[in-house]
Length: 350
Image 1: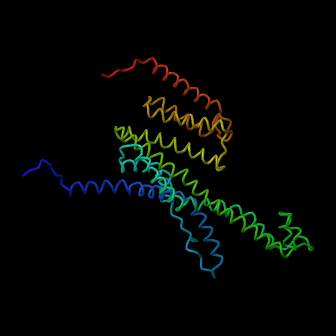
Image 2 (image 1 turned 180 degrees about the horizontal axis):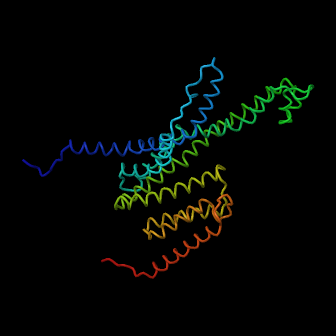
Image 3 (image 1 turned 90 degrees about the horizontal axis):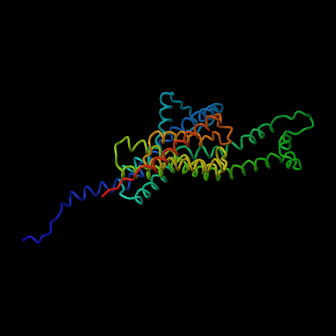
């Protein structure tokens, strides 16, 4: 006798629920690991010449067993160049891939998925290359001058009455008061102290740089991709605005973070404000679906502002009149857009 309650097939619902939960749970992690891991292609293009020099150095010591990294691995350019390009492009697609896998119905779900992609992408990028490069830059590179000086201190002095360690005292006057045979030990301790401090800076800066590049791309891209997928449309109407939003926001925020941390090129307050303003225009143009010509002008202006053209940055290399002309054209198009938008009659719906 029927009680009026209909039952669904538990096997079908369980199967659909499992794959849906699997995509939502592991999708952002896998995308982050893949997108961040592919940056190894960029790291290889920079690190392989260094490893070749390490291998050449160990070849002069045949009695020593070289480390496994001390190898001359030089793939042809036809292999290395595509890997480097893929490593540079892959992080920009992480957000759209995460949004497609998760298919969140609200902003909070996209924020959660974006944070997961950002953190796993940051970890992967740090492990495969960024961390190594930054540690080298903060530990090895600053010590090269002192290590070279250490090598010079083993040479015979130019003056017969001089000591080999006099070159150390000339560079660091504090060592003049030390006995000549103790200067090397004191100087060695100074090198080690610099490397200890540099290793800590290297870890912090490496994580920060990974987060400000790959991590930020994963987070901003997921928010942009999720919103565009919920808005709907063709592949072209999703892909083009996605890259507009992702590239502009992530690169702008990354530049501001690096400038605040003292890394990369310096940035004036005026240029930072201009960068924030033009990035906001990019976002508003995509959200409100402005005309393609106006959005192209905004994108061109965004690139010039990022470059510092016409904003007192002589390193941009672009003549200021060209930048001012572009800024003027954008101003005219914005005034025209807002003027006609204000005069256009509103469309009412029942």
